Length: 108
Image 1 (tube, rainbow, N blue to C red):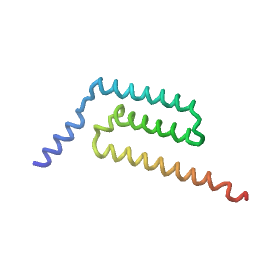
Image 2: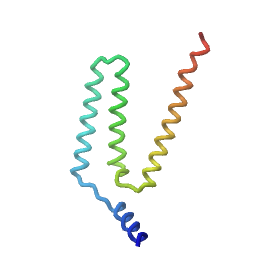
Image 3: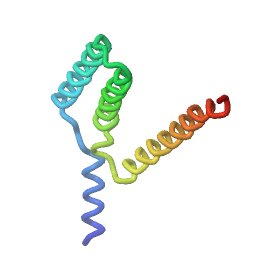
Image 4: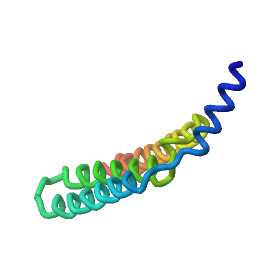
């Protein structure tokens, strides 16, 4: 019985249809975030300018991945794959940043 239920759930995940209204809302949200990024670039926040810009960019990328790439409605395996890719990216950036920061240590 549970095999039949799992098959039905998988079939439902594959056939999920997103309404055009959702796409329009997400598109408007992306446009507003772009305007917010431009507006934030004119505000002097010192070292926080990059942090704010990257936070907005991460939010926009999350919306694109979840809705336009249909990850929100995908299987757990696909979500795990995206998470593994994100983890790998963060590990590589972290290692690159640690190398970049430590280069000036020997020059003192």
